[in-house]
Length: 535
Image 1 (tube, helix red, strand yellow):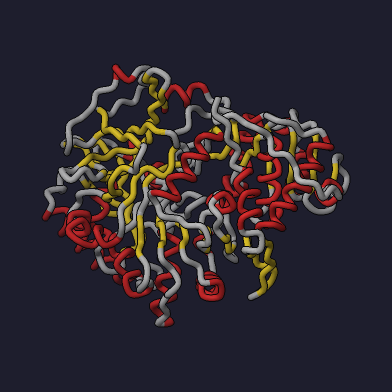
Image 2 (image 1 turned 120 degrees about the vertical axis):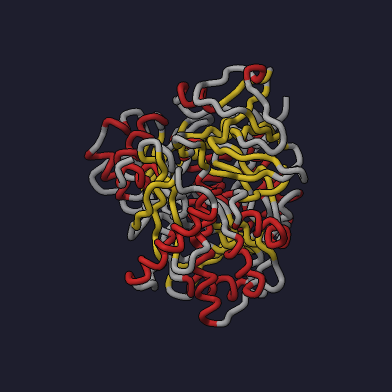
């Protein structure tokens, strides 16, 4: 039997580097609260003792509805120390989707802010399985305990549960960019594989300082010996961030790396250029969550003189999978992307197996039923490896649609399409659900949209299906006058003709604001746009 518990890593670093800061959290304008690894480990022990005394036990699904904070990290690690399974759901997904996700998880325990308990009190059905409630803050007219009450006075070390690598460790939900978010079951062994890849393949080192633009990555830092600087921003709306706050945090604490969506880095990059600022401490920025235009990577060559941009590929169900650095992208790859080759996401990481198979909208039960495509042909991207999750929580139909069995192994169907080039690099061409089938052929959004995204004044574009034709929808940059719309349309029409797309693309339309996913504020909801334009 193989044992592993990611929470034990926090205790290891508390012993190894007790006074290294584990987390800085904003507590006011230009003010931060700091906790060392020793203090964070002790706080998680106190909560673990209190939760155990309250009756929370190994294997119990526990809904965690706490805003990003020191308590959020301490509570999650306390639950994992017990062997309980924290359930992490983005509250910004919309009330209907959120309540459906809660009902599906069937949580036994609920730890949340007062607003979460008020919701539970008035809309009881989705929370019907909850037996124990913990309020992070002041408890009012509902039952249970306050977190402060459960902060045990015991100073003894909490004995971390000896969990198997196959034991459930946590449940995290997908972004829901193409439907209702799905609960992804992480096993302890998957966490171990992710930590190993972050160390050995991505190059995250002990003592690094991270500013997580995606909050889920803050949970890996205590297991890596990395200091977390929580950004002063609304996690549910990164497009509204104040870039001055992020730049100030980077410069104050000497942040060495960060993970975030292209939306975040576009805003920060523009601010740095306007203020003529450089981020001298930054060694790595990992841009992910949506296609990253080469032009954005190029901007950071000056902004980040001592570091480099990387664009990993992955999903909630399987990450990280591939990696490519900015220097390689800005060579011939950028030119190929601009000409419609797709977005290159690099070479496969160690221990990961990626194949491209014939696109199929039906379930594929066995690997022998999948048809592998040769190099250069576009098809479905499927992946196998220790970081690949095996099933969705209480979603047997979605699990059957997304997983392919090969003996004891599982291949995950990414829902993306792409191809491998002669150099063994993977190219991403878009989501399978967003492929546009026209009378004269198949169009892949990421390939086609790149042709038009280079037009001056264009913020982004979306190719959607309408009947058996394609419609190009354009979102202009906010600082562009509406009178430029005619000029942009004429340039777009010229590109259509130059690339022999006249028989495929029937209309050019403009939309003031594209609907995007709530987690990254970067994934375009093309299916919503299609409905808006009559597709």
